[in-house]
Length: 575
Image 1 (spheres, rainbow, N blue to C red):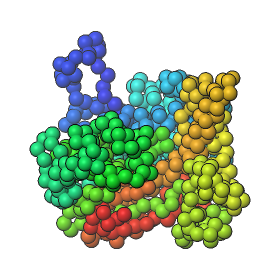
Image 2: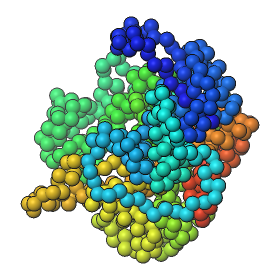
Image 3: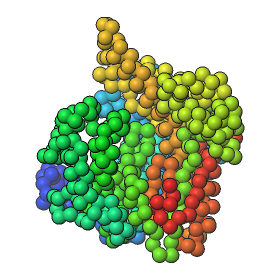
Image 4: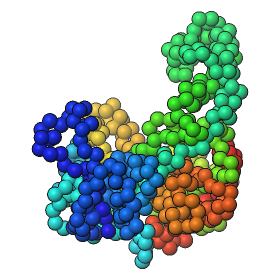
């Protein structure tokens, strides 16, 4: 059963005068809960509850194993968590909307067409997707498969839910697309729960780390002692006593005056030059980045009561990877990771999926040779043993194939890679050709890449030789994007299924609820804050969830998705 959650519609007088702050403040804080069945048809009376009664109403329905349907998890769930109420499953309309907009698995219904028109998507070549794997019996036991909806609904939320159900159920791959929407919504629940839990963070250790690198905390607006010392050293080496190294323009001019011909102040370009100023300049840039991204101001703003609580953006990257809004949660630098420490009586369980993307590529291509290389060992070492010499060369070849490296050693190894793993390489080569032609590609579960822009399409319709070269470069660039998209997006789907399955297993196991355990997620890595007595059980569940995620997506395939699990007392020890 589903329960649709929406705000009550405004009364006539409120609708006529809405929009001012006083109207918003005086509006009733209520929610409407409407039970519906799998078709979106009402299966019970709608009830209106006030803000204070909302958590109790949700707790009542949650005992009936429902899936909540709401416009956005972020709008409803944080308040429930504050009240001590967690939910098992939901359908996030806003996240589903974005997936259905670009997915070639969506039925071409007026709802989906309208989504695409509103996004001003240009016409492209016909959509194509990867060849499907055989469906497996019982493959989707974790998430329900929606039925075809019927009947109109008076509420906007209910109406859109029915339209989304229909777009999935009558599409080309309803089971896969339903799994993707369910996993994306489960990710939204997890994101809210991780924000509520926060990452354990020792302010005292962070401050000690900053002082060891930068010196004592300076007064506001002043440069830390170590940065000031290096700035003085730079002024001497560059024979420029007045320049400000924090100004890119002044720094570039100072470098040119010293005979260091660079086009930018990026570290990789500076490293190509030999001059006494280069080493201290690189050190200055590193410490300046630490101060700006994770210095004392960051600490004051983001770490409260021993917790760092970032805001995660589920599906914030076009491939489905998460992003973060403020705080830089997905870019915790090595210099400060030692400040991430568990509470007394707890330990961190940190797990990451080893070589996730090449394993996903093996599954997409159903490539038995690449599957053999990944079985029971380091995948890159397995590739090396199949004729690529050493591990470093094998890794270079595989990464080049997935990211479109066509020159140097990666380009030289590509023919051998294609001969050894023809099915896997055809997946990325086919995706690249589609992208170069202006088409769109789709991940295994149905996340579509954005269509080519109008500017891209216009650039391809050129006549002069110079314009044609530019068009060819743009085509190759889009080909590299679509080449990697099919792999990265499918890897993101596997990671979401892993997270959702881990969350489900934690909720049913005799351990603290996942809202208190899962504290961090980064692409293919998860961190749990676990009481000492439950560490072994949680480690087992992490591995079991990875196995379940593989079966959930691909069925019983002979490809191992290895997970490295570590138990540590500092996040710095997990790397």
